[in-house]
Image (cartoon, rainbow, N blue to C red; front, top):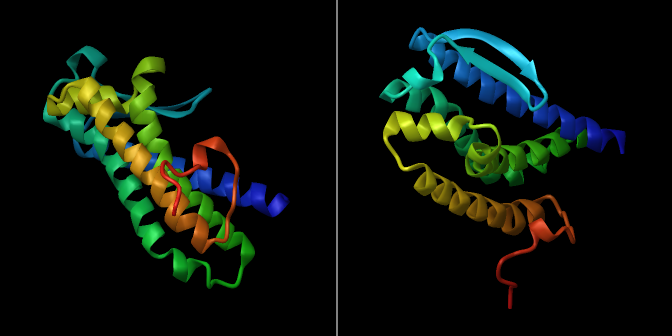
Amino acid sequence: MIGNMGSFFSAIISYYLLHESLHIITSLFFDEFHSVKLSLIGPEIIYKSEIAQRMDLKWGIISGMSNFVTIITGYILLVFGKKIIEMKWSFIKKYFFYLTIAFLLVDPINLVLGPFIYGGDALGISQGFGINLILLQVFFFIVLMINREFIIRILFPVFHTKTRHFFFQPLQKKR
């Protein structure tokens, strides 16, 4: 049990480190980084420019790069799942299992629900790239559902995982 929890929390911390580090790196590139603030929902990057000024392309990049990279990394981990399962150490296998799930689900969930709760990356992507926020949310809802199916149909079988959790039931049962 401790191995599962340790692997789970290590994966979540790794996700946040990569995601927030990419916000820091891209904001440093555009000379917009100010500081990091720890909040109830996790680390928050504070930028130099006020929210009302965040309208140009750089804000789409600052807000979106971390989401793009973590989701792509999730796909890469999914592809290498069969190699990961061959590893000796149970902790590492479980870590990569949870890390793959985090990379495939956390950002799509954030981009779909974040604007309703705390704003977040979706607003920066929408304003920076000039994309309608609702269309962006619909797009990432579709990404979320596709990634969920990849987890159910690819990741779970590779890691011999079965669950009855309603979120992880396939949209269409196999015949």
